Picture 1 (cartoon, helix red, strand yellow):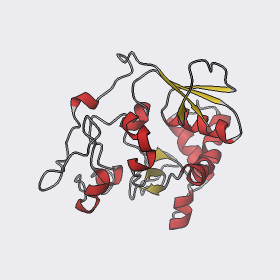
Picture 2 (cartoon, one colour):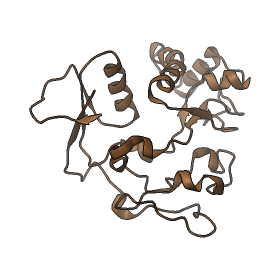
Picture 3 (cartoon, one colour):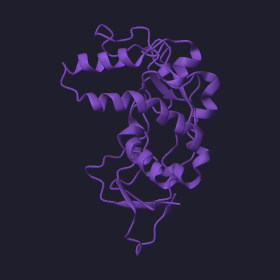
Picture 4 (cartoon, helix red, strand yellow):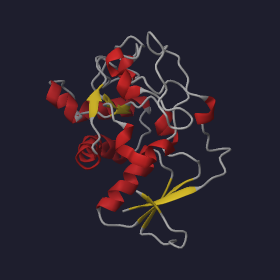
Length: 230
């Protein structure tokens, strides 16, 4: 990904926003040979995805199959129909269920993304028809080194909640709510100038916050960045 010259104003595909949906759409188009204009109004990339809990609901995913966890297309469709009280468009639900696992397998092949099951994390409404109380459908990314992003690392928005905890570290995901000491060197949050912040003795508290200067909201950001995928 490189910054586009100001005179390049024509693209095959234009994507607005750099959250997960925007970046995946841009990557898919670029992989097919299209020139892509990727626009972000904030002064950091990542959108709400970068400050989310990072969990992805993917029924019938490959990780479930590899772990011997049973799931079915029919059960997932029943669950979505139940949550929507029958108002969901069947074609949309079917596309989501059928293509979700394939999209993540594709991302792992082209982007180096590695996903894992959040063990024991149930569906939000496991009591509904097709729901899974034992978990398996919720995936989260494995640890990914920001060093692999090079100069782009400092342009990713940091969570204002707890950037060094994964969903599986929390009590909801079967963890303790504390940053595992063995992973400190992989999870150090960045300081305002990009330098690592030293973990305090005893580890990070479970409600640790990143510096306020790192928080960004699109509503008051005045800088518009745009890039082209090459």
